[in-house]
Amino acid sequence: MRVCVIGTGYVGLVTGVCLAHVGHHVICVDNNEEKVKLMKLGQSPIFEPGLSELMQSSTSSGCLEFSTDIGYGVETADILFIAVGTPSLPTGESDTRYVEAVAKGIGSHLVKGYKVIVNKSTVPIGSGDWVRLLVLDGIAERKKSSLENLDVNFDIVSNPEFLREGSAIYDTFNPDRIVIGSNSSKAIEMMQELYQPIIERKYSENSQLAAVPVVLTDLNSAEMIKYAANAFLATKISFINEVANICDRVGADVTQVAQGIGLDSRIGSKFLQAGIGWGGSCFAKDVSALIHTANDYGYDSELLKSAVSINHRQRLIVIEKLQYELKILKGKIIGILGLTFKPDTDDMRDAPALNIIEQLNRLGAKLKAYDPIVSQSGLSHAITGVTIESDAQRLADGCDALVLVTDWQEFLKLDYADMAKSMNQPLIIDGRNFLDPKKLESAGFRYVGVGR
Ligand code: NAD
Ligand code: UGA
Image (cartoon, rainbow, N blue to C red; front, side, top):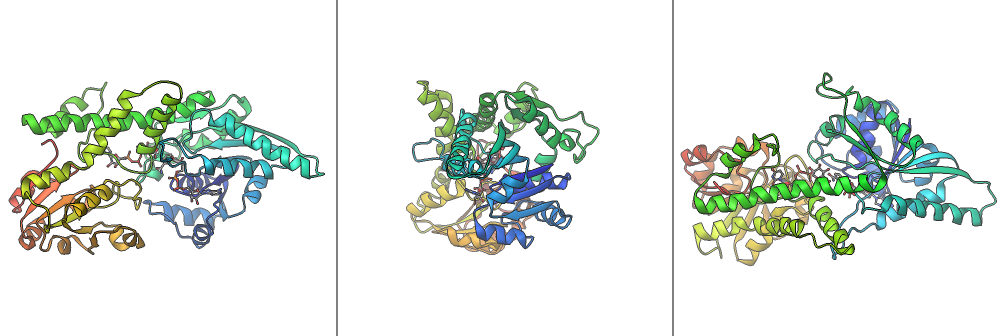
């Protein structure tokens, strides 16, 4: 099938590359010329494991191309994905201006034939119908100013994305479900054909598994599924963090508690890792957007508001622990292990490290940091108030404490005994409960976790 993906960020580029890999012809469109230039050279503008390799193989097989020209993509493809960002406005509601620009752009380039327009971006409930109107406006404008006979027909689909950064390729080929929201049977049929290789698990790690469930819904329900999924996951993490804070007070170990409750199949073991809370580009903005939508309809979402406020407080829990251990932080040298919001990504959007750095700077601590990606990329220039070190050993040198903020696998294998020797005080605050306390203690550290 011929596909156009508009917006080549973490979602759009992965979607485009994976659909090309399964044999569709994909045009990835972005209005950022620098990004498109880079992608045409075979380089991924983002760090996502496995993405560059897949991108290069699909480009050389002729299935994948890049362009800044939305008109070319709209005219060529049958299925048009909108995958632009929907960040938060200061009010908490979703900023849909990029979706609006793309929908208008599609409308003003539709010429003839039938197209399926797919909202892949996470958008407020009701956006499917809104996009339909914007596209119709674009067509009407074109009709006014053109003598061409426009014979255009299209349907809207909501196809929310559930991939996680850092395992985006795996998640795309091994989804738990595919949600398709539309009132058009023709559009649904085309979407099912598009995803058929993935539904049949042809590219899955375990091709013996049953077919991927496809959830067919109306537009509004598909949009709500995306918000509800992220709100649930964010609330689940805030729940375990609440339990961790109680564990800290009563002398229980939240990692054992999480294991004990997670084995109950009604609860499930995933997303029960306590620590400094959730970050990233989506949980905060999507939970805020849902709270905002509820408010618009006169409903005060107390549960979701609590999930957000627990998460705010949780980020600063390492400061409380540092103050308890070191008393005065002014002039103390603190080493931050990990900066990105989670491992295996270069994404710093809403990273807890940023709040921790800001607060420690305010308290007069001297900060150093090491992150496997940030230390080696241009990203370090964007992070102020902290000296970026090139490795963990240099980071430890002269520190009064280390704070583990991101659970990068390589942090499991560091030579902690050597690091402890070069520190002023061998103290480690493990903000992700990621390290083995016994190993750290035998390496000479005083180990402090969250709720353990
Ligand atoms: P992003 O910011 O990484 O990428 C957005 C891209 O859109 C950028 O490359 C930008 O240049 C491009 N763009 C903006 N306006 C454009 C226009 N008019 N024409 C062409 N290109 C344009 O965003 P993202 O993280 O990929 O998120 C995209 C959407 O997917 C959001 O709604 C987000 O909530 C949702 N989502 C994200 C994730 C994730 O893991 N990041 C997962 C699921 C859903
Ligand atoms: C999340 C969802 O998991 C995806 O399904 C969704 O598509 C995506 O948001 C989105 O809409 O953008 P992502 O933000 O990439 O994916 O990463 P997660 O693995 O969900 O982690 C989010 C944050 O929660 C990270 O900061 C992580 O460290 C934290 N986390 C996660 C915990 O603190 N504890 C856990 O048990 C799990």
